[in-house]
Image (cartoon, rainbow, N blue to C red; front, side, top):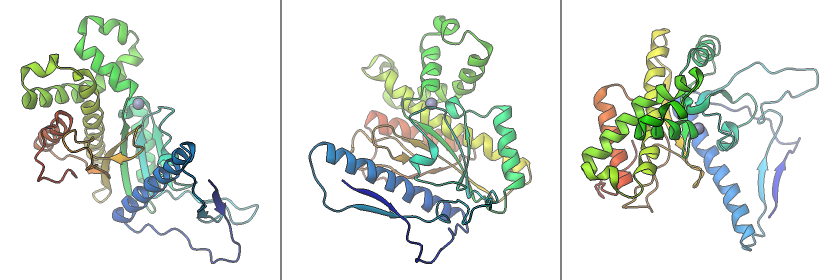
Length: 296
Ligand SMILES: [Zn+2]
């Protein structure tokens, strides 16, 4: 398989244009689809399925967000701010196939909202508002920080072993609200016995990953509005380590062929969280209404 990044200096240089949040979401969604396509082609090639069609990606210094000439420096102008996890398997720019100067990225384990993270976001919202059109909170499946929070919830007597230090507790404590909300939703839809059913811990981790991203988006939306910014769109999504897609809901176990992709809007109220909890439980317990679209 040939993967070719091609720069033709005779082609016109067209600057990237992201005028609003819809264009920002489209750019990230299309970038994630390109990333999935590249990895899928490599996986097919590994299996011996040969493709004679090279995958050609046109690039230029401008499309890469790099200076056109030596001696120049770019003005910082990201179109999206992404708060994501530090996990080495989830590099933000690669997942969205984005270049230099496209994304302002804040990464912290569990994509929680600590004071220093908020300071970075505050800086970006105040100083990069001219180019910034979207804020994304992105969790990922199999998150170690969320897993630790779930294990601390399921086995409270081991909490001291899981979160012995002040710094670890500050991470895990911030995720507890998502874990408890996910557990409540799974119990309400699956009944009291759901907690002793096979795969319960894994379902709780997955539900908590989505809910934790939504909780952070909710908190972040309030903080950004408090700064006086009433227009910036705030969404959340989860990067699935298996499918490589960023999605607003997990795979519906009753309808695995109907993937949910894209982002969810930041919740605005307690009712929004309840509705999201129900949808997560429906997907993970395979009890969704087949006539209802999964996108949220
Ligand atoms: Zn993580």
